Image 1 (cartoon, one colour):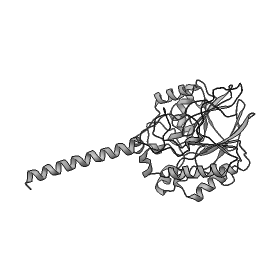
Image 2: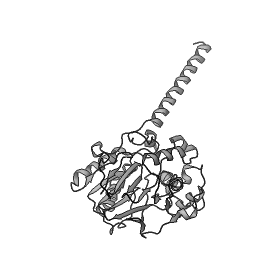
Image 3: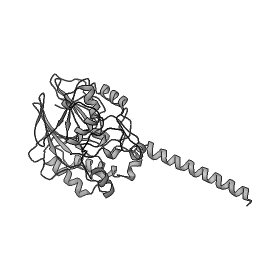
Image 4: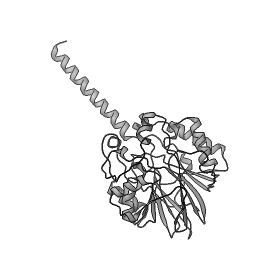
Amino acid sequence: MRPRNIWRVLLWTGAAAVVIALGLAAYFLNTYQAPPVDPAWEVEGSEDIPEGAVTVRYTGTATLVFSDGETTWMTDGWFSRPGPLTLLYGQIEPDLDAIGKGLERNQIDELAAVFPVHSHYDHAMDAPEVAKRTGALLLGSESTANIGRGWGLPEQQIRVVTDREPIQLGKFTVTPIVSKHFQFADPEMAARALGDPKIDAPLTPPVSTFDYRLGKAYALHVAHPKGTWLIQGSAGFIEGDLEDYDADVVFLGVGALGSQTDAYRESYWKETVERTRPSRVIPIHWDSLTGPIEGPFTGPVRAAAFLVNGSDNTLTFLKNKDATNPHIEFITLPRYDEVVLF
């Protein structure tokens, strides 16, 4: 083959390789796995909401809005969705437009409190801006408080909570219980996400994803004259921690649960669901961390499978628990629509 032809072949081969690589990157970064929940579990928004009913709205991840018509408060308040490459290699900060749209879609003007269940970006990053816009009290650990301080939230809107000390929000009694975050099976991921957990100074974004360190992970037990519920925003547990906290409903965080062992999943169920004896389980934190916050929920972006895999295991586990616990109703919530809880 003539040298000129050799170079032409090499050029076309290289160009084809680049096109294939770009195509694969687009596929893995912009498409999503199926959600690890049963579509049959999804309920619709409630058309008739009786006066005094307790309702819930769901944005995704662990962002939940609770209201009894007199008092409204929320967990996390996370609406920003940085893309995969930004999360891994760039710096992140609250998306002010997304926060405005998220509050509008949840029909929120005023909040009594916003309580991130821990201080990772997908729970606490947007909470200070949510508090600013709604007058809410920012509740959480000292690490969450430092996220608020770094965003310029006034100190009078920040409260560091005490383990098992009830907080009164109107008729809602919210008891934070120090728990554990989901335990990543991969040692490197565990070290980056869970090691050195404290944010010990005001954190001012834009910063690295992993600058939003864990702080403390909380399970939240909520009591209201209409009923009780538990919010476990991350699939972690401490043995016996919830023994005295019965709940009618458990909001069960299942993020990355499928990547753990069968024994871990069984222990998580025992310590979170069996301990609290609910009649209803509502899985949360099963949707994509990078997908849009409009339209249908998606499962994890396909690229996430290289870091934390196991969506099929999560779905199999949850469906098995549904089948073997006929006394427990499984449901998943629609996006933004108000659903009567009690």
